[in-house]
Picture 1 (cartoon, helix red, strand yellow):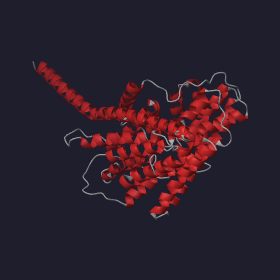
Picture 2: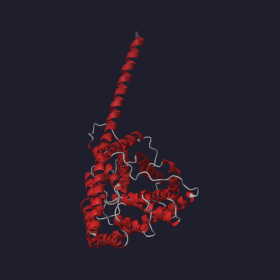
Picture 3: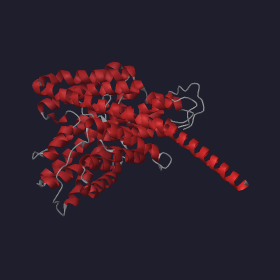
Picture 4: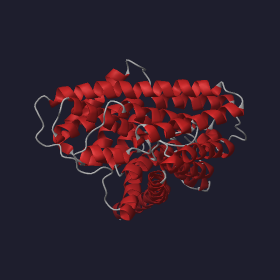
Length: 457
């Protein structure tokens, strides 16, 4: 009798324990699921708006080429003014801001995180980038999507009642950033690797389930609306020559050094701009930057304009793989100017485009066949992005998922690792690391923490 009573009590205890555990797990998972769904929907809307803006820019400029001397500086100026006037933390890529927010996501500085991740940031980010791309700016939407998605996750987390089971604020931000990148490029694995390599810097065992589900839900939402698209497509990379690996190394060294050098120039210009205290000089810099891009586009090569996706499509999927010696420099100049004017805009896609032109140039110089040229173009994309971000695995996985060419994963990984080594010759740290420290210093110097309450990380 006693034995049966003990067994009944044990069954009751286990059923009660497991039901409570399941309930808590579901309550903790729900904010991630809801945030991922919302992030996916916003990412799709943003993608469509960005594509419309880039198409509108091309239509206007192709129809009336001279108008670029008005369109570009005016759009740049308004895009910069919106950021400066309404939300300075919405400027630039958005990834350094997310990195800073992750570091600040602790009880002491928790309120500072809202300066980097908020609904105002989302609105300003979208509007500023749309104006920049309409003006022909060499920007991308991937970094902004990361900050937008992280802001959505942050907002959902802030709306949870006090009675809700505790959720790590830091993990929510990291998951949002990964989900944003996955939705932007349709690269779920790239989003996960990005979170581990660029954001977490540590083992992910404490939030791997949230990370995976967040990325999957955001990706499925984007795919459900946009379709199971590849960002680039299926380039021909068959019948590669035996000596291709040596040319991959050559491209990786050039592109990695170029990406790192571009980052250093960007940082130096941004530091110099900060010495221009008078607002008139800031206005002048933005207008002159817009006129410089317009002049190059009108008189020399309009390949400087836009995110560069059309350029990547051309060199990868058409017989016209001509880049010339000047186009890589134009793409780099376009990225430097567009990033330093102070408006919003990402640097992922422009970096990929710049790397693609370097790969195409090397293939052109050595008269490579189409398939061998394509592998150099892909290697250039990986290497240049690695030079900027110092995230070789993220860069390689992103390009791999964009093209679905698993047969060349070794070449892409090799290009990323080689570029990472060569980039260190210019600077030991990535552009994002420098900018993250920049934002953190500003946050600490202008510390406005009020009414801090104990909250979990």
